[in-house]
Length: 106
Image 1 (cartoon, rainbow, N blue to C red):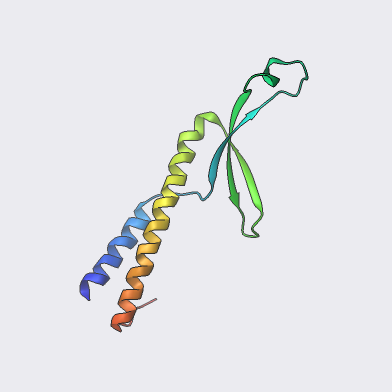
Image 2: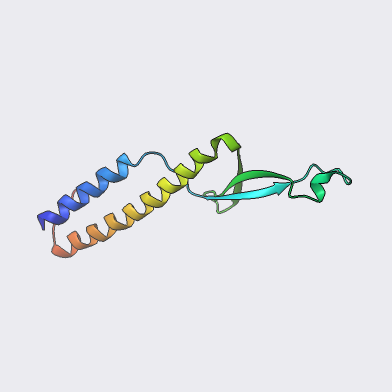
């Protein structure tokens, strides 16, 4: 029983230490300048990166990601994936503690 409580404390510590995170998907889109005879209409055009996510009203939001900040955004979305996995482990541990019949604070 004590090992479950210790495990939960460890998971909570890891969750807090994980840093900032962002939920969403990063996509790469190719843009064109809009001029009809420009070379970019024949080639791939300029690459732009966007973060797509759903707000609290389940409306899709899109945020432009400057190329020099792309690695930062990739790190933040990876942190979200790790945080989500940790939350699932915490939930599983809390259910195991509850099944043992221990009263928990909070």
